[in-house]
Length: 232
Image (cartoon, rainbow, N blue to C red):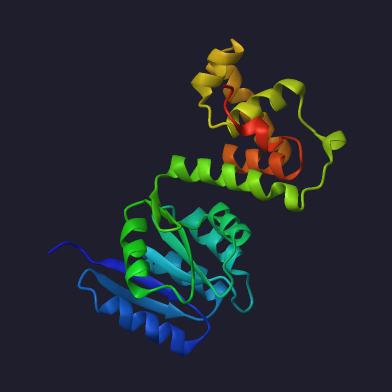
């Protein structure tokens, strides 16, 4: 028999944890390894038992659930996190996925959907709006949806852009989903030069990857929604 998917539940409501446990353990391929009610304890325990999947409430005592998500996914890249919350909106989903979550669901999610998501994320996939996405597809989704909601509350501080004109040009290509090779070809520069510019962009914006950099630029009004669309 194949190894079971090992799950850890993080929620400060005992009845909700018990309900989750019962739902999960009805499945032959799932096992609940641990339950914890506190965010800081969750980080310590996750590092100790290294579960395959963590079901994590965003609203936790002592520590924000998104920060817990960041801590767990940063230190345990093989562990997938599914965020659960009472509040379900697109901006929250973007924040959760950007923090490292592999899926995001309201707490009233149907059991079959949650079980499906647990199985998918345990293999390295992501599940958003019931769609199974690869890491590259998630990056494209983040950029597209961040661009769509950015006008709702973005601060236009284009005068404070810390990037050079060339870095801004490269960042626009990144937001379109272009690879380093494609950017190098388009701008007639080497791939190494593209990599150097992207490293500089990440450092200046204090973000961890190219997707975060694109989202940061969109939210600050440096790149507009139409800039992220490929040229016709």
